[in-house]
Length: 214
Image 1 (tube, rainbow, N blue to C red):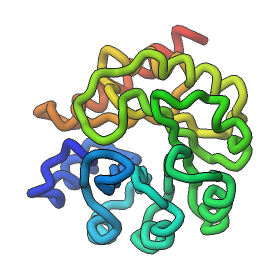
Image 2 (tube, rainbow, N blue to C red):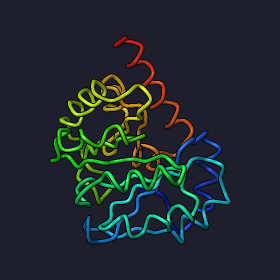
Image 3 (tube, one colour):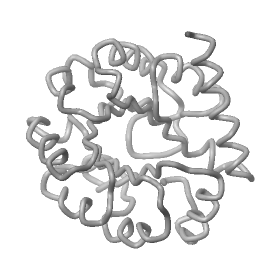
Image 4 (cartoon, helix red, strand yellow):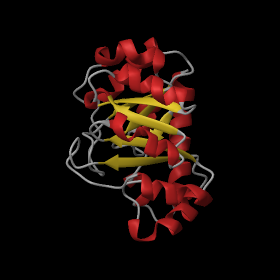
């Protein structure tokens, strides 16, 4: 939820729900950890009653521990924060899990998988950034595929692997084959005239790629 029409969010939710959206990826930016501003818990709280879909808050913010309770209170089902934003990811992952929601950890393109290996047992979800965080519409960084493959090898089958950035018809198949379970799509949905058709095309490509690689 970054490339959407912020002037008509209610309508956007109606269109996305009608298209069969299961998860809303909520891009929270503070203008500090990333060079852009988006929205915070007040907006999410207003959106929550308007859809039954899962809310995954992607906190691209400094000091996520300070604001965690606000996002839980707003109704998020999953909270994902960046390993680069904290001195030690372990305690915050545990706090999220103790709140009975999904605990996610994100890594930037320049961060090696080795930097988060010790935290993986406490992760319900790992988000691989395939662009530099902060802006939509960027070009996919292929090295993200190697990270997905490595993470699939060393995480449990229950761990959700998510990919964010440049996910489109030309890249989603490779992401699925590399082990991604959850695909964060922005421009490839919101720039299309029919959200449902766009989502069906992407889903079909992902499923086909998994079938071909198995």
